[in-house]
Image (cartoon, rainbow, N blue to C red; front, side):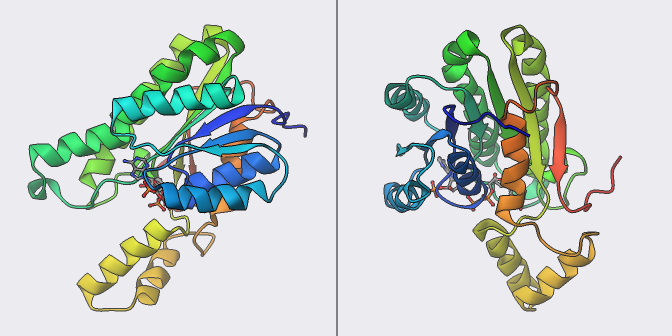
Length: 261
Ligand SMILES: NC(=O)c1ccc[n+]([C@@H]2O[C@H](COP(=O)([O-])OP(=O)(O)OC[C@H]3O[C@@H](n4cnc5c(N)ncnc54)[C@H](OP(=O)(O)O)[C@@H]3O)[C@@H](O)[C@H]2O)c1
């Protein structure tokens, strides 16, 4: 299958580590020029050096806090200046804090909205002029709670579904421009964030992180956490020219964990 990603330009948001970094790496390997970004310039510099070693697609980086509109505007402008166009947008972010309803104030809800939903709205708005000219691919990274809510993650459970609604509406509005919009949701993929969440849970329960991991794996039919590159390969297919007839859909990459139909 020819993915035809060579020569394309991708903006991968929140890509200094974890899933975003794995997606950037996969795209560079396919010959795509990639703009990586996060808040931390030092981390970006390190990832930039690493990705350059692949020697296929070009790489650039631009620090941005995606809760700030002016940072998003600057990021998109820099991507355009650096590579001349934007064909692919990967919307991604850090996760909101875990907790149940009574733990959170209005400010917590506002923060989660800005990080996990409004930032996606703003990046789409900024890249639209490029994509309306040549078509494009937009992927929103979400969470398996879009199919089955996760206890104790009320902020995520709420705003990730907003992302699905946004994608579904955008799919219809942007189809005339051949812009395809899909949502891809990880189950448990072994990143620093998941290790941290397992550690927090372990400390709460007075057990080891390994115990928590083992218990989680029992709920995953494939019996293990996913690797970031396994998740990244699915995303890479969806942004490629091999995927031309799917838009407005949501997919989980979870080793069979979610039981909802
Ligand atoms: N891994 C999984 O199994 C899993 C499962 C379900 C959902 N998810 C969701 O998928 C997303 C990525 O997960 P991950 O595991 O890759 O997380 P991660 O390892 O914590 O990485 C998060 C990335 O987001 C960046 N970031 C955070 N806040 C930002 C901000 N305000 N502006 C710009 N960049 C920001 C971080 O970079 P800096 O700190 O350098 O800014 C980092 O690059 C998260 O939303 C997570 O909730 C992951």
